[in-house]
Image (cartoon, rainbow, N blue to C red):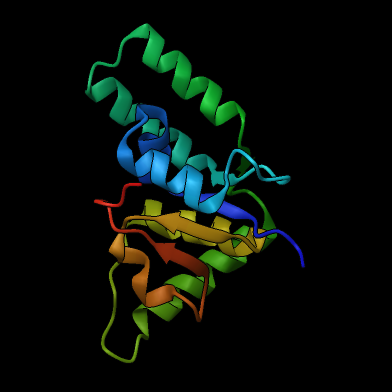
Length: 148
């Protein structure tokens, strides 16, 4: 049996860096530190998390922890044919959802496309991805109140 490759959404990376109950829960439940394959993330998440860190006036120590956390992930660039095709497919699928069109933020759309192109399973607390799981991406929506 092969190990699951996880794709980390912005909210999960923030929880891990902050060392919150949610971060500890995700790390322990999904075995992120024990995984043989490093989790992946979209380059878009790098931008989102850095903006949030600066908006919240993170100090040097926390910014350093963020940088190290991002360095320990495999970053997926959006400038790849598989990601671009996944973006098109997911955007069209969202528009054509049987229960009505789902309007996704473009950053979430890129994150979903990177996840799909990598064949990964998205870990997120964001219900905006719910309509894509499991038909268009693999993913798990984690209750933000989760803790060990």
